[in-house]
Length: 401
Ligand code: AMP
Image: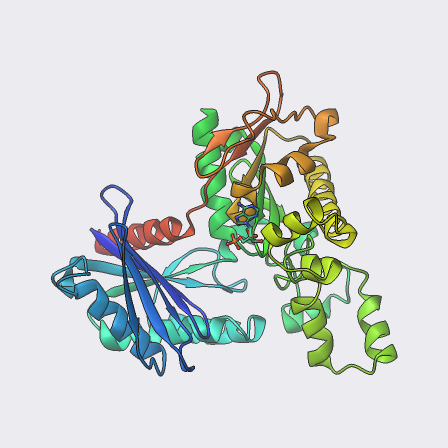
């Protein structure tokens, strides 16, 4: 059985075709600059790249091109569209309505429409991808898999903000959390590596990429996470400020005479690692600036990031009444031994000790704690696409049983 996974943004679209018999990725690709000059599709099959540069005017055009690329006699991987058993779509926001993945039908599309106000930049693009697929692959079952769903198990005291309660009841303002598929995948994999039942574990998963979030997972369920109503809350990120004193917002708006859009732009696109370092939002550039050029602000940005992550690990240990495993994942978590070491340095009081030799690892799953560390520290490669594909298959199997 093959599942096509679609992750649709406003001007880009990532896709992957997965063989569900062995979890193998058969093809993966990226459509960039949809509806813009210089649009293109890049597909990789068996290590070979196939690039098409042509005008891709909308999401339907992008899906049409993906289908053609997958079917291409020379560069493709399938002979007939019917080989694709189902399509799994990543949907960023499922609100409170969707605590689990669902098969897409008309009623679900209405439900997704209701969630647009919670994620105005993301959900419409996700829905464009779904609409395009339903036109071009009308006979293929499709599922929606949500970034927020995994966190719907959080207790009320964790997800309600101490604001007037009617902001929750009338506007849906509460903590939702994001990166759910990644936290779910790496926690399950961690339990497997630790040889323990996830239902008996307390885990802290650190998804550290351009966007970063930490999650406390008790007995297999998310009980707390650092991103909130939007993906702006939590640790400092590539360009996002993370949690700050909310009064700063009104203060800078008044002092600098900013519009809502300008203030939002500062917090979402000009802050975090980029804002403090003034160098880049990419950790690799900032690490080079700090190490080679002795750039003090670059070092400060790294210090702030690692310190924030460390404080979340401390807080979440308290929230769960202990911790058995700390997991690092995503671009930075999987590839930067230096960042992992800096975050874990000083966590000995919890019983977490990183092994500097084992920590020198990238590109594979590994345990990086010392043999006598009570808490296991692990690096795990995330695979959000596989979570989407697995959920999709589970749903179609259930549907036809
Ligand atoms: P993601 O959003 O998961 O793709 O992660 C992107 C982030 O991971 C960027 O800040 C990259 O700089 C960082 N990253 C990727 N590879 C490395 C590496 N080898 N060393 C340090 N940071 C890395």
